[in-house]
Length: 226
Image (cartoon, rainbow, N blue to C red; front, side, top):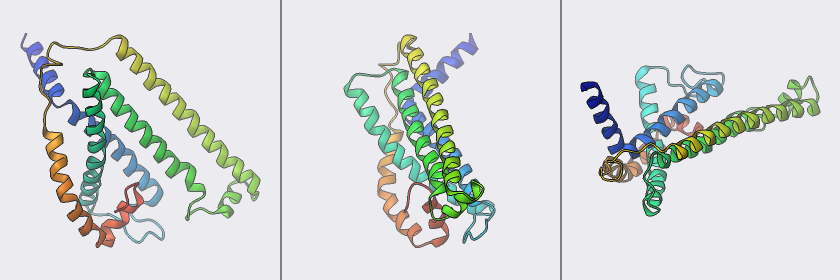
């Protein structure tokens, strides 16, 4: 009985903070992949060839990641507020609303990160047509064919992932998880107040970062350029 009571309390706590948790789930997942890709492409945490800056010590890494999380929280938090406000207007309150937000944000960011770090890397300032030719054994045609195969593989993987997400969404829709407190339990205001405070502080943070080449370098490698 005590175990069931504890589970019930945890469920209520999660539901009370459901919007904040949805936003945090997106942020942490995106951050994990972004940081991994930044390391793979730029060796940003160990220092790569011709890379002017690297975050090698724990304080440097922690500061960079915290600032990165700050901007991501502000971005996805604002998107979440719009999404949840629309859901309120449509009288949608079930778990599918928050699952849909999380999945949509992850899909959009997954596609963007895939294009930025995988597909477009063949044509950016660090990889030119000569390298593409070398990938194809000296032939531009073969090099472009190699790149197109990479694009096809990426597209296939995304189609599979989207299919899995759709299957889960349909399952949730047909087996809606509900509790009697889902409509009565008030929503936590932590997300809203956090965004208000961050909106005031962010211009000052951006000004400070814009004058710091060391911090700005890593952030410019992300999708958000400050």
